[in-house]
Length: 250
Image (cartoon, rainbow, N blue to C red; front, side, top):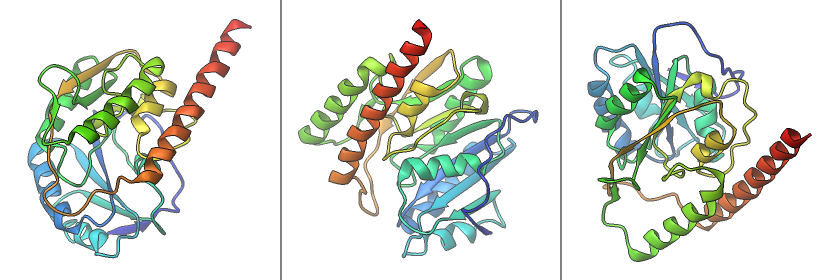
């Protein structure tokens, strides 16, 4: 089933018993989406869960490929009007989800779906947010060039004054829905987690090490525009924190 993204955004904490919603933002990932969904389903077998695919009108038929699996798995496909950005796709997916635990995983298989179980377990134990971290012990980036590692390190250092989390730019994370309840988020670019860490309602964060894998099919969507959007996001978040400090001082 494919539904319009024009449905009203709903972010509220329900009282069901820890249903899990996995949001998968996609753009031209037809070659990966089927395998990804199958691996998520195996990982969450026996749990109450849903997979929410948010597709930015991929011309390669990604949305249709995902929707074709809806008879086998609990899948909802949200098809948007154009390429509107990763962070906004995730936010849109959260709004269309119904889980008490909500999370996001990339469609390109660089995030191992098998880690979802560990992330959810951390939340069920006591944490508010659990993220796949490349920057804690035993975490790493597989086959990255020196240039990409340098850029990533620089981007992380720029975010360091905003949060104590070691990998605040991770794109692989799960959280209790209460973390984002009532929050005013302004999704910009790729890095929604960083905004959640700055604005969200939470106490404890768990970083779970993982190996960020190599893309096997398709091509990366990361380009100069996304670097510029990241700088805009930083400006927005630093200004937000400055305003919050002024409020607290009054």
